[in-house]
Length: 433
Image (tube, rainbow, N blue to C red):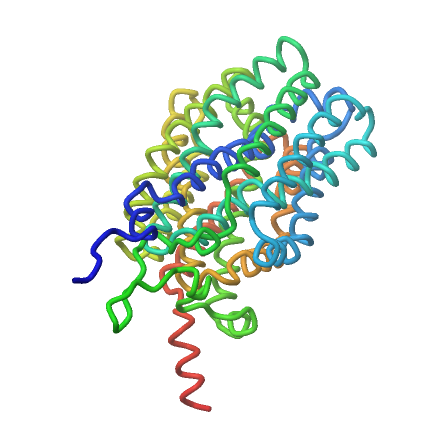
């Protein structure tokens, strides 16, 4: 009689899938990445006032970091795919934390600000944190990919809910330098779970994506997942992806979305102050927005694994356009909550976009392709905050910057709704050949 005792692989499959532990660690690290995106908005006004900078010049500092991220994007993606996401997450945490501490101690003029923020902080946050965390999720999940990415984005919102008001309070009572040093310590601490908990792929632990059980061969024996290709499935090579219209339309649509979003994150507190709030009230409202991101991300994560992601993103783009345009006409602070709710529904689209990239092109070259996307669009993303700051410096208002960003989101929604599928294009091309 055949031995029916459960094998080691089967026993492992009955436990909590290790990919969820990877998700937990990656989510924490990605959440602390909100310090760079949302935290800069908290430091924006006191930093610019102390160093005597215009809003356009202060925005340029942040844009230099984004531009560096764009140039490093293809290399960072290649490093994640080839060297392993664990090491890039850890390295990014260390560089980002050290950079924030240096920002609070050695920066006293424009050039030192450019060097520390644009180089050290930019390299750390552009290498690790959200980009590497999303790459890790794409390796560990296929069927539950969007849900797991939604958890990452929800944690980003949860950390933002706590950290933004906290950093604002520290800034108002002890100065922005003390706040960035506290932030640096928190970021350095994230290197520990990155190194201890994150693994490069399920196959490296003898597992399969989503916690699936190994298949049985014709003799009824379980096939070890170690014997299977770590990237089996419907992967598309980088060269093939670059030949598909889907990849380039995805780049265009994503960067139209990110142009306004990137600008908003940099100027978030100044925009809300423009609308009549105090700096602390503005930071608190950003915390409310971050809190609303949590359920929005989880719901979109569940829906993204069930429904057509293209249509979900397209609908979210239209809500984002409504948020940007409503901010132009809203004047009373209570109505800003409508803007915050719309923005929370719009925020999770980055997760759906990353999941769609994984659906379209597979697991093996995900980080490389995402890095190319970031690199191609980095110039526009880098200078959209500068444009917004320049509009303020010239007009004393943000309105003329928000309107074109809202229109760009409508165009992006149309592109996503009609986004072609790459495999159908490649099959048709092979048939013609």
